[in-house]
Image (tube, rainbow, N blue to C red; front, side, top):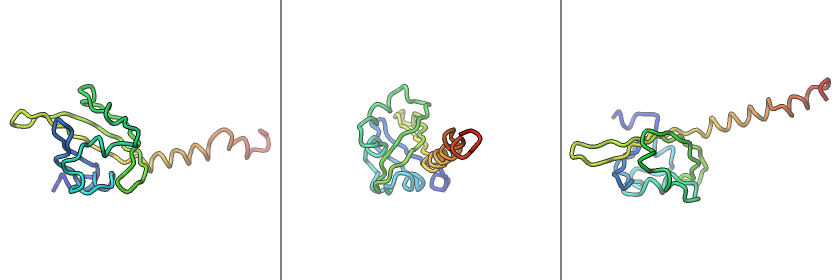
Length: 130
């Protein structure tokens, strides 16, 4: 219940990055159902189509955060913040746990503010500064 009720997307994969668990927030963020995602490589879902997702998951990625442009299962472009951690289960198997936050709305608001309060916009509206 806690896993499904969180606002952040959570994905658990095996060491080969094949998806084992996928919560409802991950479904909403990535545009894939848990059934569609199960058994697929997380690299396939965290991609912008350029193939750069392959280089994101290395031992150096453990404990790291990054922002990633993705194309969702519905074709929408989104900016997602990814936090990647490795865990070892009770049988000694390595797993990845990824936390996902949709940053698209924040980026859109930032762009609007930069456009609204950018230097050219301020100067352009102030007759004394022209």
